[in-house]
Length: 211
Image (tube, rainbow, N blue to C red; front, side, top):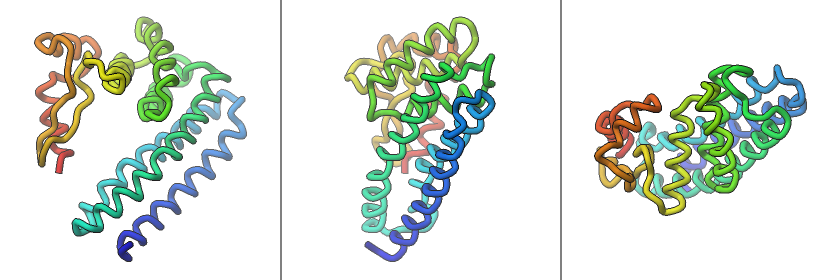
């Protein structure tokens, strides 16, 4: 392992240890409703740190070998961290139910959804959350886009066409394409209905993440 990769991973691991220690402290007070938004915020910060850190090779000019080393070692850390966040989210749901907009606010709803969205190691839990979110969309207690993104995530994982075109992959530098979409001709109607931009605009944004 190159010294630059070693240094980057040491930085990453230290940040993760600090974040998980803070999450563990907050989780001790999980029974108290007022603790839930702060706990979810910490978990979301860790979730985003994990994913944003993958941009570091581009920022620090890693060569091709260093990028391979870095990607393999960072991605190996994803599942344990996502699993830990998922476990805490399950405890929150068991204690308080879904952190709805009406009870806990928009940020708590968003942060909980992001953690469920990234719980790819636990498809059964993602399907469970889909069932929880659907009636909440109808009464305005979760963002409609949350259900849409998670619906697509589960569909693609199960080799089914997605409904909203939120899931895709990079097929080359500056080129992102969605996974198969059911009734693609009417996808923008469905996207608008859940508060998403037209698919062409979304693809243009996602192209920027393909290097």
